[in-house]
Amino acid sequence: MTEPTLRIVTDRGLVQDDPSAFQLLVLLQEIRRGSENFLVAHRLSRPEHYFQTVRADAVRGRAQDCYGTRAASGYLIEYRDGSPDRHYQAECATHTEVHDAVTGWAEGRDGWHEPYAWTRLDLGAR
Picture 1 (tube, rainbow, N blue to C red):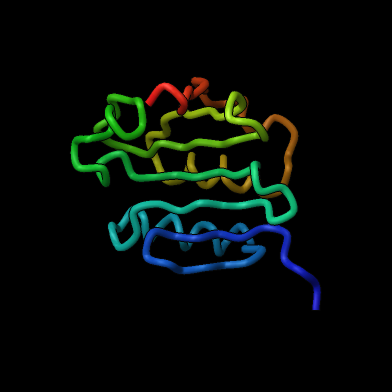
Picture 2: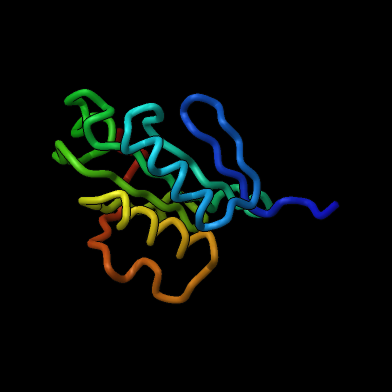
């Protein structure tokens, strides 16, 4: 048995190792439906490298305080590429955009992040 390289964890505790693009889509549909609020994808060999998404409305109006955005709808996506100063956030309007981003990140595709307007997060200032 091969050791997993990627692990997805949802807010309700579902764990999925090395998900396919289809399995990621199913998880994102659960977020869209409201039965899940967020998911986090971890690179198991590199703990400071992860991708996460949350429905903007799942934070019940506290998006500005919790996530540093004014988004009231759609999704927030974040990725961290090592150290805290390499933590970024963007907004996506649809779960399809989120799916494109998370699968691109998970597969390590070149340019996966280019369609999005990323802002560096300064989590130390919160």
